[in-house]
Image 1 (tube, helix red, strand yellow):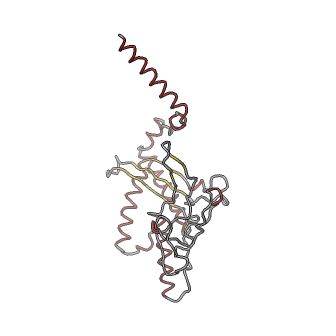
Image 2 (cartoon, helix red, strand yellow; image 1 turned 180 degrees about the vertical axis):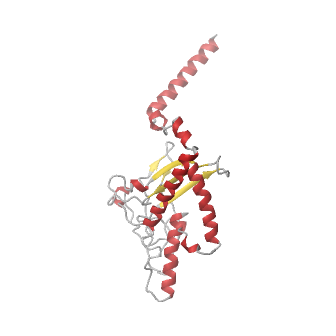
Image 3 (cartoon, chains in turn purple, green; image 1 turned 90 degrees about the horizontal axis):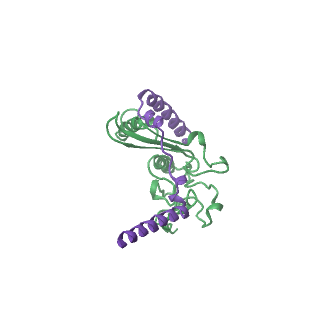
Length: 71
Length: 182
C-alpha cells in the first residue's frame, strides 16, 4: 500500500514536471506545433482532377522562376 | 588569399564579420570566382557563403543552427552555367568574368518525392525567390511571396518524374538538350 502511494506521488510529480517543462519551453507547447491538414486537404492531395490542375499550375510557376533567375 | 574557416573557397562577396542584422542582403557569389585569382571558380557547395541567409538560432538543447544557403541542385546548375560562359569568354580574350550568378537574384525550385508509382507516390514541391532574402526589394518578408510557396501532393510527384527524364535527356546531350533549363 505504501509502495502504491509512493508510486502515485512519483507519477504525479512526474506529470507536474512534464507540465511545468511544457509551460517553460515554447517548442513543447501546442501553439508551436505544425498545423495538421484537414480531411479536405489530404483528400485533394491525391484527387486526380485537382492534381492535374496543380501539375500545370506548379509547372508554370517553376518556369516563371527559372525565367526570372536567368535574366 | 586564405580560404574561409570552413575550408571552402571565398568568392567575390563581402566576408567582413558582422551581426546578422547588419548583413542586409549582399549578393552571395556575385561573381563566382576567387577575387584575387580571376581564373579560379567555385560552383555549388565549393564556395563559402559570406553569411547565414537568415537569423542564426539555437536548438532547445543549445545546438547552434546556422542557416546557410542551399547550393546544390538548381542554384549550382545556374552558377555552373555562368562559370562556363565566363571560362569560354576568358579563353577567347575577355578580361575577367562578366557573367554573374548572385543567389540574391536567383530563385530555386525543389521537389522532394517519395514512392515510384505515379498514382500512389507523393511529393512536397517548393519554390523560393530570391534564395537569399532581399529586404530592400521585398521589405515585408524579404522574398517575392507570389513566387515563394510550398505544397504537398501528387502533382509534385509527377513533376519529379518529368524532371528525372529531362535531366537524363540533358545529361546525354540528345538533340535540343540545351533548351532544357537548369
